[in-house]
Amino acid sequence: MAVPVAYHQKIEDAGAVIHHLHGLVTYGPADLDVAAAMSTHGYDAVKWAEGQGMLAELVSADRPMDTTLSAATVWYREAANVARQALRARPELLTKLGLAELGSA
Image (cartoon, rainbow, N blue to C red):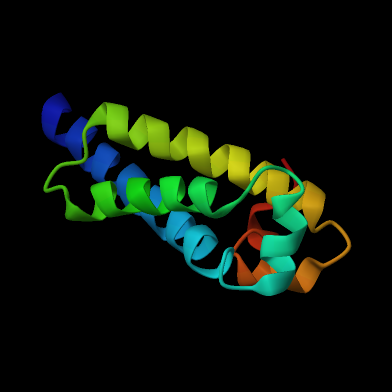
């Protein structure tokens, strides 16, 4: 019974990562204020494409691999921390990215 429970937990974790990563990589580069603020921290078109690629891998996989999920989680956490720093004075943009409800890092 431990295996199905562990697998179910992994699917829930993948779902949460997909949800949060989607908000960040969809609205981040599309919003000029977000893109400009984060570009000073190294988030250019290549960096955003990296996050979008990780999202695509997670969404297209029947069962997200641990390595893919781990890499996407690390990318998301780093990007979320940068966004919180870069957009500290713009809470409405953090809300748009889905970061406001997560609190500070």
